Length: 429
Image (cartoon, rainbow, N blue to C red; front, side):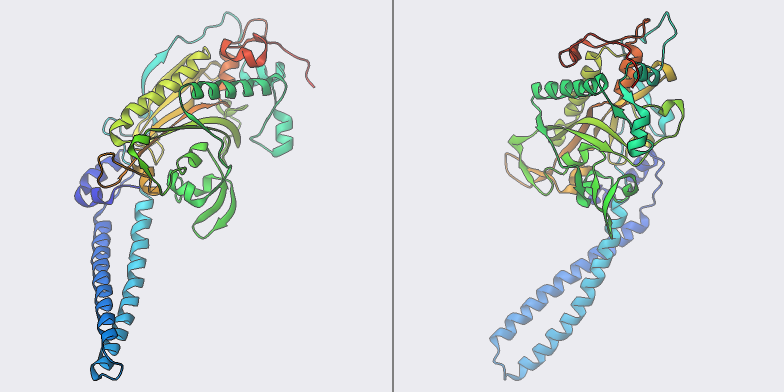
């Protein structure tokens, strides 16, 4: 949620920043609504104080005192008017909050305006793999190697699902173990969060109310999904300290979580969405930090370096892209994508989004910290990064590390779990 003081004091800046996302807002009407709300709230507070004063005076008057009857009548009239005014205040507050809830975060100054066509590649790691043989795509490789059963996945759960089997399941688990060990080594706390979350978790993360239709709802309520399957562990981790005030010496808080991710979105049968590239359920390790505002930029770079190190350790060619405002998710101020090269589609696919939400999520979740020097509690900054998502990583591993004889070289960091240095074709079952 945006700082309402910023909207009041510098509406032109807010309008310009949101326009970079192609979100065009005229704040004139909202500011008039806000002013009406504030006047109404001030009157309500004055009337409540007046009611207390009258109550104190009545308590000191004998019941039969002639003035007491007049005072009681005055108190009754005041109470009736106050109740009506409080009802109006509540309606104005709901209207004001509904407007604030649908506003996305302001993109940082250095984020380009426009959509994905304005995304900026800032660096590449290593060179694209070249083959002196006809390379196979990841779907064919996964079938020949007996790693993934697409048909039985559809049979079990419908389109957008698959089954890892044999070395495919071991490869998936090896990736997750590699990520977990790396993040533990780097001092992040391991969290296994519930997969069923409440509406407030989705709201705090910035997904609700606008993107409520993107999740698998288990229970619906008047405001949206009362309980839903988490679309990413970030949605759970961001609410870990909801409605809390953290001591400044405890910052930054660094967490990571493994979870399956459940998404209603799914692609079609295009080559860029085949296999495990896009589905309703996939595995991911997610990193989250809670920081002071003055250290969030450094934390953002730390998370980006970590994501790059993971991809680099797997021997993959990748690039880092700074997303334009229109391609940055609604809750984020700045995002870097780490994208791996997929030869079969001649394109890069994202395996990690590394984002800084600034205080947007913290305001929605009322997550603050108490300065060590004392004074008023302030909102933390929240950041997240995939560390990593596997459903696109595995296709890149198969395609980039495939050999002329149809085998696939296993990255050295995964061999302790797979107990082999290469994957070989198997007889289909």
